[in-house]
Length: 425
Image (cartoon, rainbow, N blue to C red; front, top):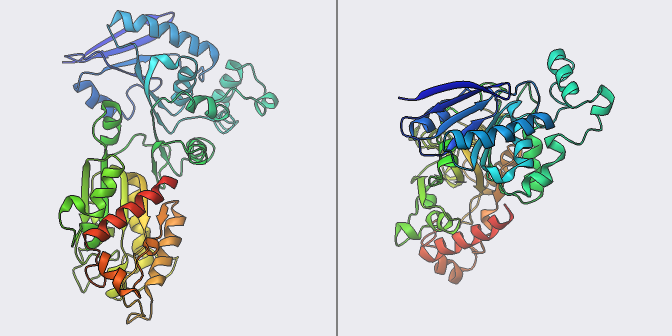
């Protein structure tokens, strides 16, 4: 049974929750110890000690960071803890975690930030008079000097990421308390612009609360170093039809090339993106996405069967699952909630790309994928750029089993093509 120990250190309250069988590893949550702590409870059961040092309402200022370091030196000796901690920074606790790591990176193994405050101009504001006054006092600022203050996390991203401390970021895309664009969104965009790998989960439409994830397995994997997951969604090509062995399908080859061994392939013969009430209504990637586990990487490819099954294209405004645009909206919205990196592939070339019974070409479905993926900020690979020409029969036979499906050589070609494109992701 876990033991809760409470006392004071340098005039501030300490809480240490020791597991029955401590493994020496520890989670240092910088604020809100018991809030949204499902992952921490699970980690406690795995032997991780939970630690909290109450320097609240100091907003990660220099004094707070110095106090934290003195506490760090005390607590690792007092409880025989590892010399590196896992920092958990929720909301305003994100400032503490960020600034502490910036000054004492050698003491930090990994950092998990959840809807963190990174920009002190965006929070607290004059709409939070108590917190606003406290923050200005802690940093010896005024309303005027705050506007040019360069000591907040959002101004120090270059130095922070230069430390190469593994980071997990979770945030609500519609955070009404700590604005996403000025805080977590700014961090994500910085990483994208500078080619920095960042594991993050943005809850589309999610507010400041609840923190964490409904399924905390990505947090547990991040902390414990468990195997990362690769998910694939799509049709028979994704499933690996006509590859000589499952491990030689393009999905498996891509996953292997990216270093993933924990692969979940939800490709299925005849799968459409849209739901079709008159034909196998449950066979749809917009339905399958609910069945998949959370994953660090997802590959989504489809559209060919929607074209051949004459699925109504719809419009960008559609949200219904029975039109292609509407089903893509549901699929990509769900995918953003469940996966870290997402790669969307437009249909590869096929023979006979004329108009279907609805009057749509396969290019119409490709364009819908591009537009909807752009709306959700997803990485797109143009499958039609594979390099196999339907008009070149000799070349076609080298790589394709029939009018639609690659053979084993085609799967290898497809995998190599995707891996090359992913170098830009």
